Amino acid sequence: MPPVRASATISDLRAFVHAVDLGSVGRAATRLGLTQPSLSKRLRSLEDVAGVRLLHRSAAGVDPTAAGRRLLPDARRLVAQADVVDALLGDLAETTEPLRVSASPAFAELVVPAAIASFAPDGAPRPIELTVANSAVVRSHVQAGRADVGVAAADLDEDLERDGHVPLLEDEVVVVVSPDDPWAALDAIPAAELAARPLVGRDPGAHIRTTLDRALAGIGLTLAPPVLEVGSPAAVKAAVRARGVPGILSRHAVDETRDGLLVRSVAGVELRRRCWALVGAGAGPAARTFAEHLRASAAVPE
Image (cartoon, rainbow, N blue to C red; front, side, top):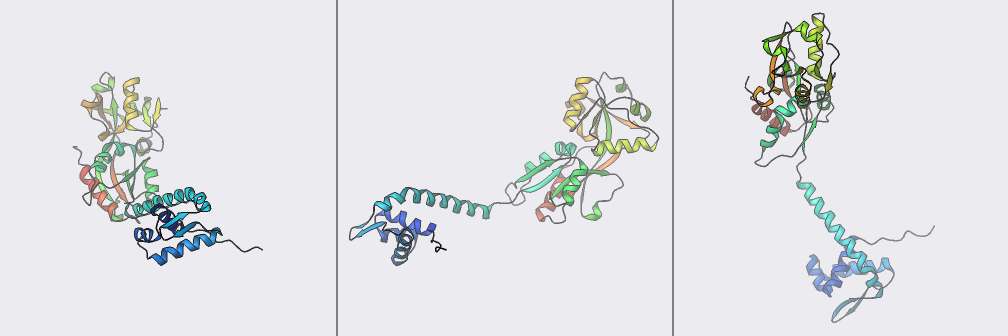
């Protein structure tokens, strides 16, 4: 088997490029912060790899040989790319890893944007990577370590604070109707009427939907097939306005004046719940700081 041929190093190529550009081994050594013997050693090493002379040396300085001129363009490109990589490596050492936040759609629209915009724990904005998913998925993201902080709804009787999580606000699943809908005249919608009427609803995996399904099942009722199932509060409100059909939403997701819609409670069932900032067990201190920041940002008028 033939011997393995040695490869040129970036350091040797850099010495060669600087020597050619400056026309002097001494000046190249000074530029690179090396002694002249050290730089000469690198040049000899590169010539040993090439198997030919790359530089003409004289009292006036150095000039590339024919082989050196052939090597020079590619050597320049490699050295320039190495400089780019060196700079990138330096930046990586100083880059702050993004805080990974996973939030349910209602609260991703309600409390998360303002919290992200104003989060600067060290006097500078912290990069945040936001994922929007149903509350059940948010919980799984936090448990699996795929999110540092989760913003999700939970049943009212779940005490997540004992596990280190941060309560944000109390919420209620409500009906949202157009001002000209017959239900607009009611203070609250009877549960039986709600169950019988096709609605604009959230997708079956949403906590809003499971809360409503479970509450109705507790009094022997089942929701009628929905007119439409959508994945976000904004889509529910748009569908209610477009189709004139009531929808199901978080109470905090609707501003009656801004949205041009009315909010009605459901009579005869318990539909209150609570929003939490879930802190991952392996998350760093920034996750706890952001969870507390979310609590301050979630001061939504009741």
